[in-house]
Length: 266
Image 1: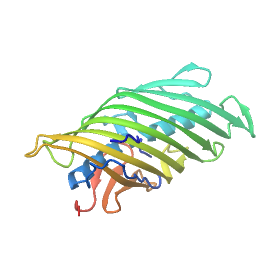
Image 2 (image 1 turned 90 degrees about the vertical axis):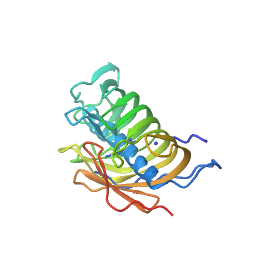
Image 3 (image 1 turned 180 degrees about the vertical axis):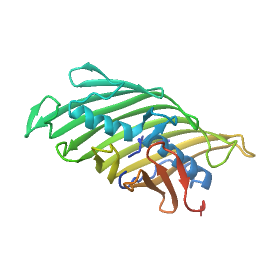
Image 4 (image 1 turned 30 degrees about the horizontal axis):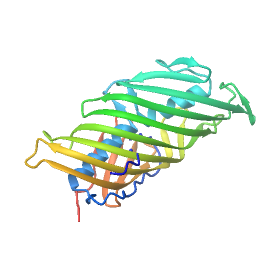
């Protein structure tokens, strides 16, 4: 299978749309209803990860962290690792941030007067939540603007590799092992500084997946690709559409996913 790179992530974030493209793997099959559900669950987990408490990660938390760091505020749990470099750990994942900032169009240390910033953001490690255990690598960059306004805008790209065991939230008792490879593009993702929530914008993903299912009547080994669109609603949720026909709602605080239409495949 040709690896292109997936969530977030990760999701990713109150924003606009996510799309995923096709693979050139001749062994690819059309996703089943169950594979759509699992893909939605994986995207939700890279957009926002939480253990039901204050510890959270994913793209949403990373964007909030980036805004604060660009304005010279170090969020709790994050440490300075060097000039413009910061590190933290959340839910088994190591996060690394590298920022450069401008003030009035000129390069300057990140601080309260920063207008714009460029941020390289990386995650790696073993994500472990109630529904997902995964080895995750995420590498990408954002351009951040509007830091002196109430709403900050993100644009950028990232790639994910996501080797996961999912305890299906749609099919109790079924455990599925996947490899997801995804590339993501973030287009005018807007974060409200007061609430630290994403309120508009879009992201697009090219997703390829391979999986093995256990715990059901039929074990499956298959490859597939999915086109996904994630639309952020500005109310703490996002609408997720896979291949234009499978519809879900993503909770941007927890990453929890709910199907809003009956599962269908052709």
